[in-house]
Every structure is written in structure tokens, then in C-alpha cells.
Amino acid sequence: MYRVAVIKGDGIGPEVVDSAIRVVNSVTDRIRFYEFEGGFEVFKRIGSPISEDDLKEIRKMDAILFGATTTPFNVPGYRSLIVTLRKELDLYANLRIIPDLSNGKEIVIVRENTEGLYARDGIGFSDRAIDFRIITLEGARRIAKFAINLAKERNSFITFVHKANVLKGDRFFREIVLEIAEREGVEVREAIIDSFMIKLVKNPWDHGVILTENMFGDIISDLATIHAGSIGIVPSGNYGDEIALFEPIHGSAPDIAGKGIANPIGAILSAAMMLDYLGLNGKVVWEATRRYVRYGNLTPDMGGTATTSEVTKGIISEIYSFDPFDIDEIWVEEIRLGRIPLTLWR
Image (cartoon, rainbow, N blue to C red):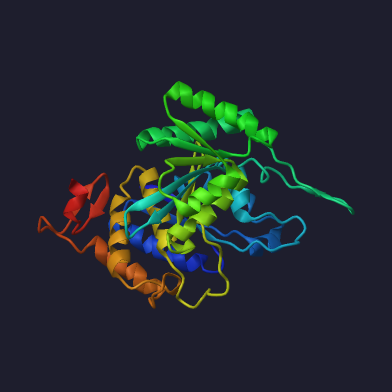
């Protein structure tokens, strides 16, 4: 039995995480979920976005499923929960997959997750404010290895996006990436961040595994969502050596919270990534979601009129919609597959 910590957060977080859990439970009974509190409301009570006792328990889990939290501006001492978790759990690799679900394409982005401008809090004076951009040897090496191993698994190449023509930190990062890639026999194509953003808009599908530092990766992945049709369908995984956290990249969207129209697909696909991480097979969830997006009614952010619950039920229905062997249940790698499409066996 796998133990998964759940932090639903606020805004639409609880709604989409509940959808993801329903989908996971429709394909496996090998996961037990444990809910924890975190975010600004917790900070107001204890002065931290998550308690030390909860962090201690979460470290014992096999994975984390995270929703979304609101990060207020200008609150002294407050740091967002997700940034806190990335630092505390050393989740150094952020993998964001921007899918075109209708056409079977995707943009793959590996973002360094714990350094850069997000490495530490800045300082402010009466006449200036200073943020620190930090890139370390250890940080650069391990994110480079993560991206290069992913490229090898996908039989692909690396597009390393940087500003090494201006920034010393990027020159340092670049040398490490090129050295490791050469040793591992993986091709690296370089791109300056400015011109790459134009390429990403015009030709998004031909960049292999995109590797970049923290803030660049944040901006690139948000821009890339235009090719998915909505930021609401984009999943991500935050990986460390001991544990991983999975979350949709959309925010808490308080303007639609409670209305029942939040897009659950980003959370559902994040859960699919979690299944893969746990050694289970998330492919069936991806395939069911692709089929639903092609033919089903979608939430308003994707031009439809469906509710969160309707989309969730539709994806679960797709999971069980095919039965090529005319049997009720098949188990593959500890995943229960009911009425799966024949294409998954090829």
C-alpha cells in the first residue's frame, strides 16, 4: 500500500484534488491518502505555512498530491507554501508537461526548482530592494542529470535555455550542462531566453526536453500553456531524491472557487504522473483524458459548459469504456484496468 499526503489548499484546490483522487481510486486501490493542512490560514495561526509536525509526517509518505494555495502580497514573514515545501523537502527538479491532448503532442520542460531568484528571500532598504540569484555546482549538476536522463528515456535531446551572454550564473550553469551531456552522449541545443520565447510561440513542438533555471522555467511553462488550450490542464511533478510532489500549475483562482466550474484535468494528469512515480501505470489516465478531451464537454476555460464533476465523471467513464477482452478487470503493474482500450497493449 502506498501512502500519499494530500494538501488541498484553498480556492479551487480542494475541488480539483478531490477530482484527482476520484480518478486515482477508479484505477487502483493500492493508495491510501492522508490529508494535511497548509497555506495562509495555517500561517495566521502558527506563523508558518505548514507545521513542523505535519512536515515530519509528510517526509514519511511515498508522494504528495497538492492543489493550489493563494500567496498574499506584503505579509511580513510569509512565504508561499509550495516554495516552502520545495525547499524543505529538497524537491529540486520540476517537470512540467504541456500537452496538446487533442493531437497527442506535448512540450516537456525541466525547471531547476530550489535555486535562482527563489533560493532565498531578498532584502529591502528605503531606497532599494535586492534579490539574490544563486546557482550552485550541486544544484546545476543534479538538475542537468535529471534532464539528461529524461532525454535519454525519451530518446530525445536537450534544449538548454539561458542568458549566458549576459549573466555569470548562466555561464556557470552552461558549462556544467554541456560537460555532463557530452559525457552521457546527449545532444544539447542552446537557446537564448529572449529569442527562445518567440520560437516557443511559433514552433512549440520541436525542442526535445527543455532545461532551464528556476525563474526562466516558471515563465516559459506559463507561456507554453497557450498551446495546451488552458493552463487548467497542465500537470507537473516536483522531484527530490526521497519524495515527490505533484500539482497542477494553475493558481487558486479564487474568482471561480466554489462555482463548480474549475478545470480538474491539470490535477488529474498530475495524479497520473504520481502513479508513474510510484511504479504504477499512469498511462491509462492519460489515455482516458485524451479521449475525453477529443469528444467530451469541457469546462468554460476550454470553451465548454461542463462542470468540474461532469469532466471528472467523463474521464472515469472513459477509463472503463472499452472492454476488448470482454472481462471486467485486468491488473497490470498493480493498476486495475477495467475496459481499457486495445491501443494500450500495443
